[in-house]
Length: 123
Image (cartoon, rainbow, N blue to C red; front, side, top):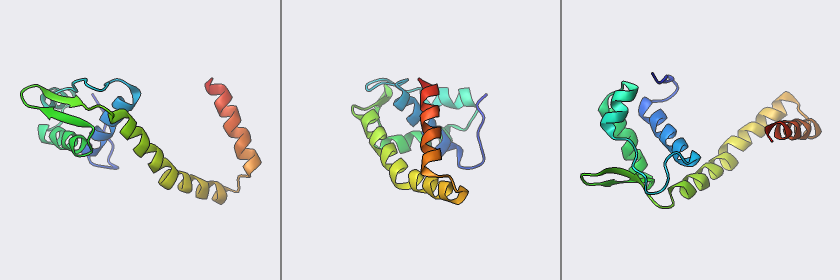
């Protein structure tokens, strides 16, 4: 069973997971995403919670409803997500990270060394 955290509403966590799956390529443009009923049953959550998460995906222009067929990832969804996530990282997360680095007194040299080591390990 899926674990949910108390930091944010379940519908938001589900929305974020679906966005992640689209970004990872688990759902490609034109692919159907699981039905509200299937997700509700699999994760043991209320169908209204799933519907709310899916509606956010529709509102963001990532998926579309096709009457009688279900929900489908729209063309350009992955690119849209990537652009939005990059902007979020650069405008919100990076400044917070830089502030934390300054608080900890980590030098630029030390940071670059750690980043290079981490990147070498990821190859």
